[in-house]
Length: 379
Image (cartoon, rainbow, N blue to C red; front, side, top):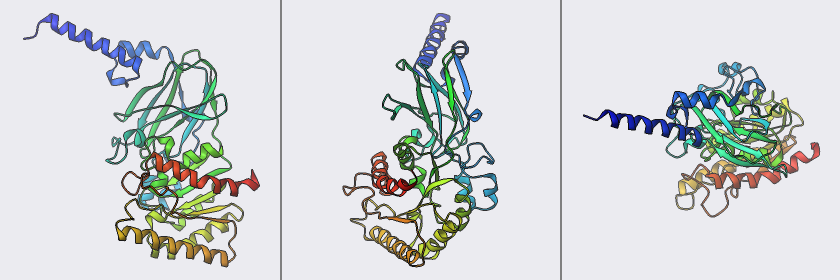
């Protein structure tokens, strides 16, 4: 039987460890009630819904952090609707002089990670700050361990009043999110930008698979580089140029549309759907540039002929559709070939299909000059 002294020592050790956990940013279940109360007294909490989240294309959503409007449930396929509950591409912006930045957030799903994608990307938060040159630079990432998280994102920040952005999870939904700063610190919400949107419609790759952090999905990288807000409409396994999506896309105040669905479509599907999809979107938006993006090259296509054939046949069908669109008088189109999207060294993929952070960076490198060119006339 353990002695009373031993029990007291263990209790003291647990309390000490819990207080240390508060300092290190360990989430709430490891904090004592005393430490939690004392810590919260020094924090001012701000619900992000009070000023808005960037990357939400619609206000009329069933859940605040959904990517499609509530009306879409009756229009799109169930798979697309379920994936639209993920918060991919969303971020919240604010300015503060607080030396500490915290976050409390609740997730939709307890599935925090996938076998090929880390919890930090699937369900984490990503904090960026603006430096003296005006660049958004990485500061910290939340490492989720459960659905309800209370974390210190960053502490000991250098003095100064600066802007921040927090990117939301890629492959999980968010039920609630609060940003915490030191009590008495200045806090200025920054309203989300809702016009001149980079609208990206695609597959799991656009959705963010398999970025290590939320901000490393390539549409987010492009948004930072171009200084544009973006709406991520990547739907894992379900970016199939569904015609009903064109009506929803047209409701957004887009500066450019990127259509990147080949990884989810066979050559026959492309031949059937690509032209009607683009023509219908163009009928809604006569002047908005549309960028058509081929699929990336499978990492094992050099040694597995069936994989190479999959790339070649889908690309041939897409190029043929593009030529027919031009011949029929559809203007304002830009075409991006897929062979060089990930480089040529085979080092940019996680599983032969989904990009690593290196792959995401390379895709942004390939698309950035194209987007700058098509955006220049209206910039």
